[in-house]
Image (cartoon, rainbow, N blue to C red; front, side, top):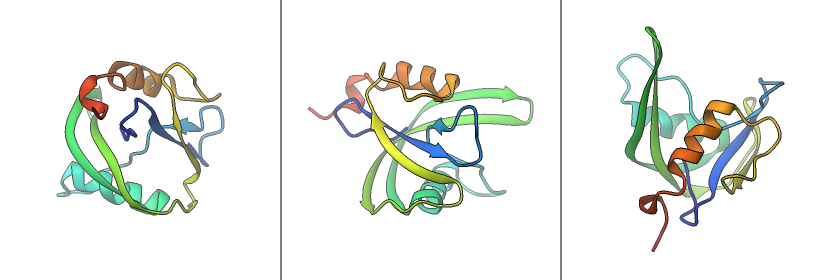
Length: 121
């Protein structure tokens, strides 16, 4: 979960989802790849942005073969470039949801975005 230090969270409009195109950035971990490194790679591949990944925020078992890890992250550089997977990005205020935001990602944003540790002093 990438935040801007003021309580807003970055979401992306994914090209391959029609009903729920808006979601947090992420992706699949390659065999033997560190999950934090996978997040940095996925953000770069999908947006051309560079990110620093911090501590894990949540671990959820979606199924016996699918584990979801949510990390705190901050952008550190790059300029957004649309890709085959992501056409647009924006920071959103929790509670002001873009139409088509995934329900499970909305719940994650609600749970973590307002934590003091995610905001700059």
